[in-house]
Image (cartoon, rainbow, N blue to C red; front, side):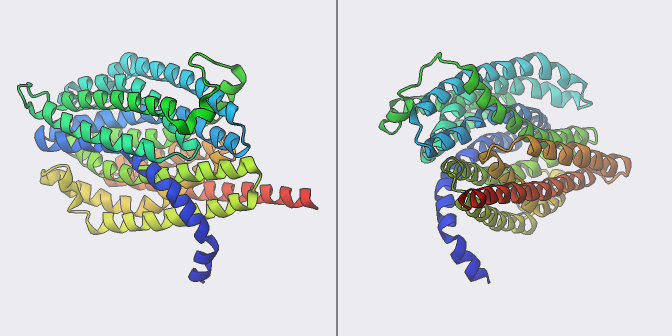
Length: 458
């Protein structure tokens, strides 16, 4: 039975993986920036500053995914138009997307500068943690502007199936971020030790360089001449902008509902204590690495789905999507086994504080169980985006995380005093809910598309 299943979907596995692997690496780059920050600070600056990184990352990840979601509105549209061989439209969509993303990034920076930096004093966190968190958050806030420019050209290239270039830029960017982070935090080559502020500055420099390189690549490469012929820097059009925002805004909400649930969990955990918060940061950082890898597989699923949707090839669309589900189940099963088997070893990547390691080890067992649900829900969202179905999935994510996940976590963790573990049980149940509802939605929508084709043929 398994052999027959493998033979049926074998061409789709290879196609999807070829497209997905570079996206997985470049998606992973965003998380590895924060992972590197945590590792450098955990080893060179101590537990209190690691708790500051946890607090800032839990707040900033929400800003980051809103920006990435808005930018993501471009990819399925580019893939659909490329499927229709409408190349000039791709360049016009890029022009609109760039302006939308720059405006979005400025608004997000102002939100960080005028909103989050003021609110951070009133979240019930340790004053010492907050004092370290503020300058780090300030640097990350500015970095959202070059990051959004990078995302614009990355999503454009990926929508056309060019996925390796953003991967290489991300790899080099991360290496620069790690080297500069260690130099600034420790204080090397005559630079005074900057502590947690140093990793914020290294991230800003890294993201600025990535934006410059990715922009130059797309605008100068021979591969895109056909597509960017109609690209104009200041061209904005109401209809095209609305098309991008109609996909991008719900995607931003989908991302933000999940990430804000984990951010809300971090704030709840911060009211328990700094050690618990640092342990949460260790476990969630590891879980977010696997999530971003799953997100790369989901992005490839979006591109393949949108391309087949543009060609009106709905049988291939459904088969390719099911193959993506198979790949994610296999991958997340492997990471689940890793988290559970190495739950006492993995936290040493971040810290040697035994109190932090003990709590993080318990959380990694819970993370192992929610891996499958996290992977399948993100692939479900990716496939549905490819066919332009974003509104109902947005409602599903809100219900899963904010009507079920966080209230249940608060009940178990705070009211029933199960602590940090109880909060994570609630999040796991939220992921399970999203996973099942999105799979049912995918089944319903793709079967409807297939039946329409059969009716049209008859």
